Image (tube, rainbow, N blue to C red; front, side, top):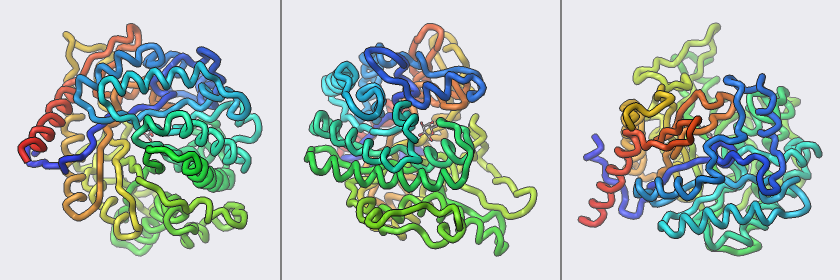
Length: 446
Ligand code: FCB
């Protein structure tokens, strides 16, 4: 199958990580605590009781990690900045030592000719802002815009792109809706208000970054899925439509159409968010790119107990259905509903039952290779149907701290032995390296 894949010649091939999941050095060089430090320090919140204090120690090993990316032949690296590293409280003073780390990282990437794609917010709000109300407070959106403007001013010309948020759906629904993620709140109404403040903060940050002026493309990263009715029943079809409205349209409509989807608003009823006059004008800023993270589809069943997805291709270690054609369907559906900017697949990958230690210097992960191949074929199908996709970032470069699953779930194409911090490229890393090189070869031949 991979031989039949021919991506556009200027297609970007990358790998992705996020700050809290790999950096460690949780209190080094003036970094303030984030809500993930607080949340993970209560071992009861995390399945294996672990935290991100050390993680992959990337803060100290970034040179080695950039070297690994270069060895893979990656064009691009998507990573996030820990806000509380560069502004310990989330307001007030900047921390130059924090900015220095990202400066060093950018230098290392530049040396290897790897394009840097930054995400400003991958879930680690400074605890200082949480203490002032966190995302439930409208003021946090303004603080986020200050941070975005400062980062764009300092680094904008060194970055290929800046995304405001990573998966605001998760921030709102897992952080405030069901307490699985920091800050661990379980309140549907708060989750919906938080989603509005996240969208508002996106718009304000876009304005702040545009005002600075830089070469970086500016956008946002959303986790998305198609929603399939389990049967042809009217109830299942209605549920599928509602899920699409509540998850995908809830974030896309404000950005692209300047309003919330009617169906979801009605379903939220009294929990609908407080929206101030002019908010949608702020949120509806033109974006240069849309980042799409795709892992699985949603399967909508109104029966009790609900029907479960058929999982014809199996599930990952997370229990997520492997459903590559959902990626094609999602992208084609988005194209039908919105006037889209260029799209990047900013995350896609799988947790596999890889061993804790590399065996004889090798980690064989054929399931991951298959997963990526299948999803690239699905991506190619979307491109063939006219969707403007410019790049693919595999999640993840390294095994890392998988949030409330701790270190038990391994998503990396590079194995990390957490006892020694030894990195070992898995078979999937070598496959990806060869695949990217082959695509380049086709580029040259074309
Ligand atoms: C996404 C997150 C990323 C990682 C993957 C598995 O939702 O953005 O940090 O946890 O899932």
